[in-house]
Length: 360
Image 1 (cartoon, helix red, strand yellow):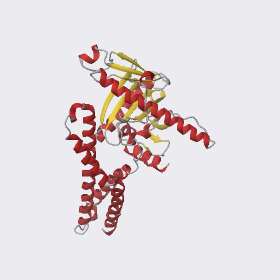
Image 2 (cartoon, rainbow, N blue to C red):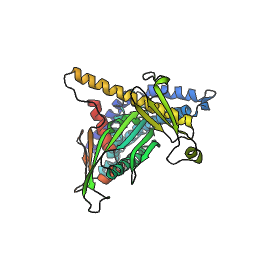
Image 3 (tube, helix red, strand yellow):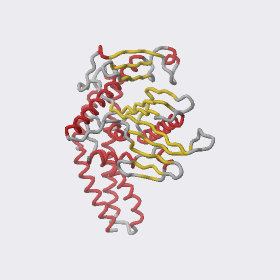
Image 4 (tube, rainbow, N blue to C red):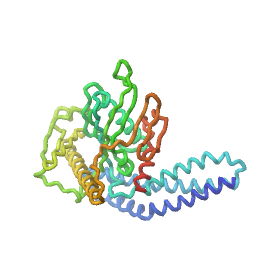
């Protein structure tokens, strides 16, 4: 029991350090500021902005409750060490507390400017025809289930279905606390090795898909300014699921940035103006990412070692045949539970990459 008590004391000390880093006073101040905004007259006149404020407020309150709950659980567990004779009764609880503390600790690494932003996640099928498009749909399902397990909102913003199966491209808007911070490490090339379900001989097939993750920049973000005359606007009819108005009226929007040729589309909202607003946010995010790539390339050049910046670096392999293994090529994290990973069990991979990026 003494050893278990020492583990809990260590957890308590670690919790105190994490709590200091997360600064509960600043969080309380933010909660008060957001609560004050909700009381302003006309708060709901801008529905989208009001919803964003309410989501942010709910996330801060949930974080506050989580912190207080974990602190209480640690105190209760320490109290039980003085009354319980059998340590095995407490061991599962200590393991659970250790895991919770590890998840909370990850938050201390998410200090980037846009880490607390929503994210725009795009999956592009690589070369390989139907196989690659099916792989893109498998990744879509994986991320959808992971996000749902976290309580994050997911909406398809744009999609180009494959001719026979899956997606050529699918764009998701993911909303929730620290979504971009958690998911930014998922960008890159994902490789699948399996027996082909589209081949009568069940031959072994390797497929690739590219994942792009961008922060959803705030509307008032002054870092990226796009003059109106640099944007070409096009309206078209939505091709995905939607109400009668969505499919019969040209509510879908495509914006093209003329100087760079970057193009984005949004077709999920019922009204054209809503689609245009989200498309502009996506365009800003892509221009921000392009600028960050150029900056990183320039810094490498100055250091005397230049490699072209690209989203397309291979980050993870998913092998389903002849054995089962999912391995991250950056952190070395691996598991033989490939089906669980494809069902959204990504915590170990994502948390390891957050730590890896923070240390780098």
